[in-house]
Image (cartoon, rainbow, N blue to C red; front, side, top):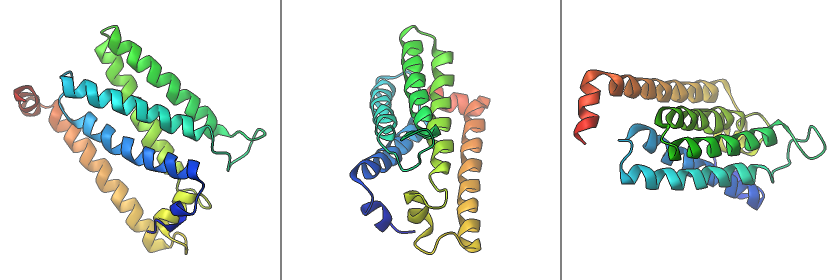
Length: 173
């Protein structure tokens, strides 16, 4: 792992990557904490602005060109912006279940799944994650292992929170 490729990337890519990492961490915090309190609303507002900045900066990155200067990634940025709008509007209308589903989906789709596409060979984050030598079998195994552990931890926490014991814990906060 090396931060050097990111330091040598264009300013737009650096800003985009740093913002994406920050909103991924902030979004994870939001997903696993109590919902509906004033802190939830503050974190949510910051997260939405951050996600909009990530999607907006993504529109300014043209390293992959499929249709002129554009690529499917630009469509993903537009989709994320639309999902953010729908999620905020659902919350404002009091459609909390719809808001929850849209925002979780935006997090998973807009950050986790899309983030995995950033480690495609040749892209900046590929070299950040795997170094200048690229992905060796050992590095790929470690990367896959880390992803598996993180996924298992998320599933475990979400199942625990959905259980009666987890519900009581969250309600007590």
